[in-house]
Image (cartoon, rainbow over all chains, first blue to last red; front, side, top):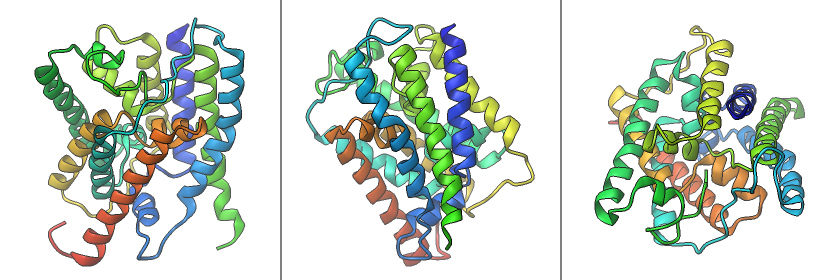
Amino acid sequence: MKFLIGLATGGLFGLGLVIAQMTDPSRIIGFLDLFGHWDPRLMFVMVGAIAAHAPFVFWSKRRGKPFFADTLSIAPESRIDGRLVLGAAIFGVGWGLGGYCPGPAIVAASRHGSAALLTLAMIAGMWLFDRVFERRGKTSVNAIGAGKGIPNVPKFCG
Amino acid sequence: MSFSVFVPPLIGGALIGLSATLLLVSLGRIAGVSGIVGNVVAAPKSSQSWQWGFIVGLIATGWILLGRANSTSIGVSPATLVVAGLLVGFGTRMGSGCTSGHGVCGLSRFSRRSLVATCVFMGTAMLVVFVSRHLLAGGIL
């Protein structure tokens, strides 16, 4: 049941990315290229997504319990720290270099060699980060995910 | 540029928002791709079935909808792609999110953390594109 919900939402998410042409790295670079022929279209992907999602976030919060689970796994707002900013900056450099953020890379990986290569490297990068933190904090990865061990790590963040 | 060019991005975006909504109201989960993949990479055995399902859904959609023929290239070397992927993976784990988790889900709940993260990764990505496409145009990248 939960697998099927994941499958359906993942499929829908991928469909949205393909229709929005986020899976085309030249589109991404066109959007990021403010000083060239800037292509504003991808901004509208975000506008559409937030418009379709934000009202339901507030509805879900008011409602409290999701339909097929006990609690909403939304991180409590924690403070803005160096880890957040540095991590986002590192991600931004990779996004600007390769033209793929994680979702589109995975969607395109089965068809486009460049996306497949980038996805494999991305998985290695994630694994590397977890190794570094496991060694340093001696906390398991699950503890990181649960917000224990390392401070200021929001739960279940995307 | 007529308004019609903004329709596919808006529709695609709305479907992404719908997906995030369905996941939130059914399982109470955030549709953040780097978080989902990161959890599966970090703990494949203890990760949850919906996370595997979500990843299979993404891959299957791409396989069905994207042909080999319309493969696009932005003219970067395999080495650059590997470096880019490593940075994307490491950075999204460190910063607890990517374009979906912070950019869509975080901004939808008016999270200040996600707003900062989104501004930072968009800003640095734009800077990298400026440096690589204009300052070093035709150069090493």
